[in-house]
Amino acid sequence: MATDAQMAQVAELEVEMMSDMYRRMTNACQAKCIATAFKESELTKGEAVCLDRCVAKYLDVHEKLGKRLTSMSQGDEAALQKIAQQ
Image (tube, rainbow, N blue to C red):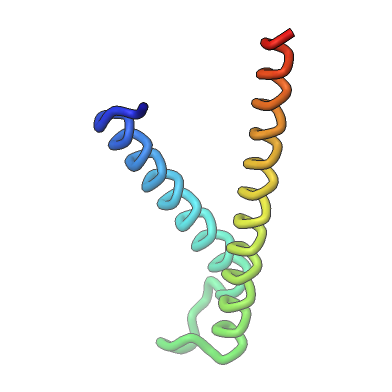
């Protein structure tokens, strides 16, 4: 059973990982969609569409990768338990 300290540590790591993912997504999509030489104070329609698509793709890939890693981890854990029982 997880203690309060362990749960707090897990929550802290989750916040740290989400912050890192948000930072990486922001940097990647900004570099891809927004020119370094600003001509207008507002985003152009093309930039806004590009950012929307970039963020959607980034989040979709992040979700799929998370599911894949979770299933791999569960498979590894099951295999280790099976070996331990033998």
